[in-house]
Amino acid sequence: MCLLGVLLLAGCDRTPEVRAPAPETEPDLEVPSLPPAFLSAPVVYDLTAVIDAIETSVPSTFGDLEERMGHPDNDRVEVAFEVRRRPFEAEVRGDTARITAMLSYRGRAWYNPPLLPVVSASCGLGEDEDPPRAIVTLVSPLSLDRDWVLRSEARVESVEAVSEAERDRCRITPLNIDVTGTALGAVERTLERRTDEIDERVAGVDIRSRLQGVWHILEESVELTDEVWLRVNPHGVTRGRTLGEGTVLTVEVAVEAFPAIILGDRPEETLSDLPALESGEVSDAARIHLEGRAEYPAAGRLLTRELQEREVELSGRLIRIREVSLRGVGAGRVALEVDFTGSARGRIFLVGTPAIDHERGEIHVPDLDFDLETRNLLVGGMAWLAHDRLVEFLRERARIPVAEVMGPAREQLLRGLNRELSDEVRVEGEVLSTRLLRVIAVEDALRVHAEAEARATFHVTPD
Image (cartoon, rainbow, N blue to C red; front, side, top):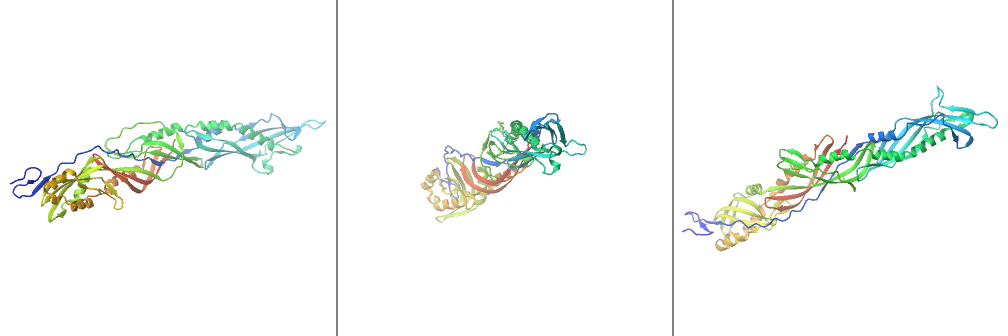
């Protein structure tokens, strides 16, 4: 005779069968947002445009040989001079630009002796006479302000003769007059009056609009492979040190971002304005937060591969596992559906909250236990099946290697960290280590959060 209801006899083999109903579902828990990553993105800028701006701010000639001026040490002497400047050369060390130019100059002097006619003499005006030389040096710290404007605080460091030799002094020997100090002092005063103009011209060099284009590039989705996309999702920018070498200025910048690997169609993109540049510390090590997903059908196949044909002895009876599947039931929990044969056959459900076994690098369900509906059915007619031994067996064996979940995410991240994003932006990086943070069960998948320690550098070279 066959039993009606939950416990059934299958034909004449009289093997009891149980078909437990699926657990009721509850609303999903809110999944915590991943914190931002900070990706190193040094902005490399060639100062040629800045040097050109300074070049146009500073005259290439000073003085006039026909324009007489008094001598500071002798009221009977008048002098005139003409200074010619060669193009500026710049060198950046640290955050300070040092700009130098070679000067050559010529001079004349007039002496009005008592009761005698005015006499005059010159230096550097003869056909075979080399004009004296001097060097002018301007220095200025350079920095980007929060509006991406390059700021300069130019000052004249020195204007001095190349040497103390006669070759580089404008000494008018017949009159015992040295025009060197007068000429170079006038050059220094002229340059000091121009430092504000230099700062204005430096600030006028357009960096922001060029970097706005770079920002839009970072906002675009990058196809890693077919239907696999990298989104950098930049959010903010932090400025670190300003460094320089030669004529190249490098501003250490960290991009605050929420990078994500997305499967499917190209994600929708929204372009935004380049955000203000905030001050802070910039590290060369990036911490990138990843999310791996284990869809329940795939997770069930992994579990079946591990548990299929396993036998468990329960109070002298034997059951053999045929198939295992996994589903989300809300509130951060999963249900394990076990299909079995042996001394009985059918399906049962166990529920619990998944967690990460950090020591073994696996997802397991440490509080796995019979669903209430399943337990009630078993207690009502098949109590031997509701055995702690079965629960302990499944707690121990129903595990998913995290590498199966995070491996693809890590691989895609590495691919995304080494590629050309555009002609102006290249990213290079390596994943150094990965630390598992949590696993969250939602309706359609297990979501695993991890923190990757990586070196990730965006090389930004605006034209």
